[in-house]
Length: 403
Image (tube, rainbow, N blue to C red; front, side, top):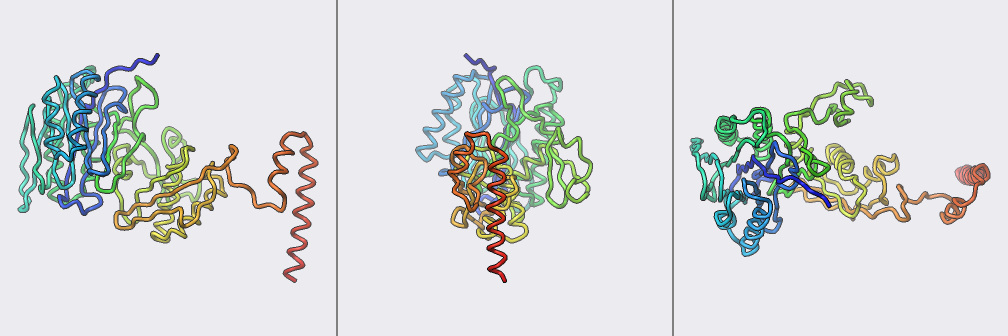
């Protein structure tokens, strides 16, 4: 039997910089905490309703689950963010925050938040709210941040000051035209460094539907997630990258000797959810081999060089399969690449390699079934000689055809 401590996200943040919902980076949300098991306290996202639901509070996990189920019922019935989170007031100690690009932001239940709005004259308003219901109205540029200190946090007592300062800084960034994805990542970095509520958690881009997934959540029960103010990876200008702790062994790129830049976890979060011409969101389907990160790197490099061309993307992926960068999948065609250039998104549909293979079947002048038979006998030298003979014969025939 597995036992886990009760987890509660102590920091929830939501930002809307484009209330029309057209900017692919115009609405984002995130959560983190000092507590363990942050994978239990991240959020639910409805692609159909373009709404994220973030949860937390002092109530028990059972009560929180009941509140979430009630909120999802409201969501399924096309409820607004205000209607969805208002159910939290019927559950002791529970907090729910919901955000939709065009319908605004709302928080209900037990909370301490600052509500930020920025009007068309670039006037910033920051208002405190505690308990009940608070909103950023539809059609408004704004943000909302909840922050409390977890029990046992060495920086306990900082939440009120950090909550206010982060809210003010978010208002300034909204006024100055930064995208919501950037603002969420900066808020997460500031909260992590100043309040100690620093374990991911994660974030989501609501318009483009891109999330950080399990980048920062703990791998095992009763563990804390990644510290969001800490170094996460090193990258070179040519695109080579390595994650920590292995990154400590590299000062320059082993590929071309170019210098490496340290990327902190909160910055990596922002990069992951921000889409652009040279940083598309990449989704993989059909494979359980854990190759989504490698696929993303290959696709981004292809898009940077060749644009959103499915043929070129497929060719780049197949080269990566040949080199062993991507394993466990068959080659892809252009028809396996789903490009949505308007929101800078690419979907890659894989077919897993069969029979436990790590790579596609070799295109050799010998029946692949021969290898299944030879795998059960011990004549290694014999099979090498046979293959050499076959390749030699093939090469000679090819040479004479060219003459």
